[in-house]
Length: 131
Image 1 (cartoon, rainbow, N blue to C red):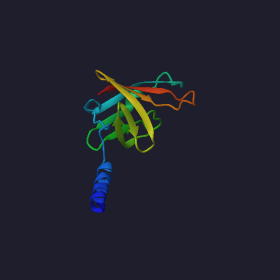
Image 2: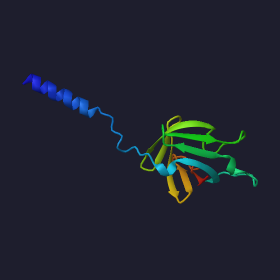
Image 3: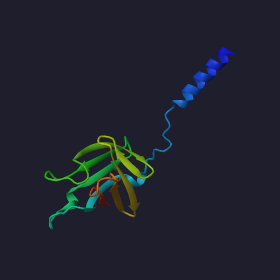
């Protein structure tokens, strides 16, 4: 009886510890390059701001997003390549624990920062167009 209990316990332990990525989604609609067209936040911008130099490029392979900005400013993230996860239309960047909900309508991507409810002015939404 002890052997059966031991084998059953090992079996349950092994099946309970398997990696379950059922919630993780690879959204093919994100793939490709996106150009920033607008930022909605409690902040101000100069009249001649050129958002078009800020781009995102999502790759399904390796779940990577590459961010490119001009040398002076950045809005979404600093330039670089970040690994991300996508669960229930929420993108989470692994390098800095920031999360964004997203919507894609036709060729427009809206990324909304999941803000801290106790901070009043951290709401921001980024609008990107497919390149």
